[in-house]
Image (cartoon, rainbow, N blue to C red; front, side, top):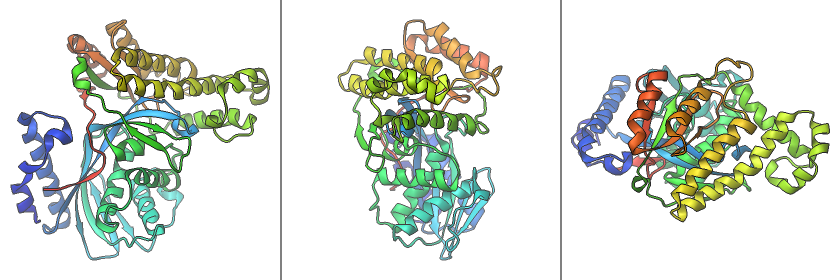
Length: 425
């Protein structure tokens, strides 16, 4: 379809399901896609054979820093996404222009990883394409224009959403949609690890790719066990809030990496690579000797967090399956306390006076008291926290948060039922 035809049919997109909205909000999203198409035309001066794609951000609900140790998580895709307009260009080059950023141009005969692309979107694009080519797919040149409302640096995994968008485009255009959502997630992780230079686990990409609420067990990282968790949050009288503290975590890779390194030191004591291969009972029995060998009490605390948190993520999923929301909230609060005390990822050790996340947690505690639940969200150290807020406290909660961190910093969101997909009209 050409751009004019797509615009005439934008009202046929199922925005209600895609963005968890009422019909009276459809116009906002129609305008968003219309602007996307305008951006494509302004950039590439072509208007025929256009395809639309979407990939969501994610929220980590349980399993804080467990995925990289092959543990369990509970996560969901959000009704915030990266959307793209795409057209084959008949060349040997992939050109992706993301709104507000320079054009990324990837020659399909130059797919080697380079440290010069660490931390850059071009590295993610090149890494995803390289894996598709390695798998035997013939990738051809295309142009894409993208725009995102997944907040960068927000803990909603804007980079993973972008990886999944690129993977979803390649899967639809060049792989006949043969690649599963889980495999697309693994491709995204590969791009982030090898081409982007970030040692992330697989949680972010899986939640973005699979969609809905998912319980994931990474015991076998090559074949993670992914199960959707059917639960209707709308009946709980609680809002899912993501609070952006405004603190940037872009330069805190060393803090995230230290968690992985320290947990692995404990695992290595037992001759294992990952903590998931060590039993908690064995760890507790040997804890005195582990301390002597590792010489790092923070590593011991982080290991204890891991053992309890990976089991807690499984219990959270089970509580939702059993329709026991109160038990779920209690487990979320336990997770938050464990991250604060044991995992210690609420502020950077290199910047101990900058504690925006701790302050946000303090406000949650003061407003919610014994109701609802709250915890650090995602990687931590800066960025965001997550809260489940009773509706009758939502106005006060939002006002208190935004009085501290600024207007628009308290995001009231929903779990969307879809991961990465090609939007059919």
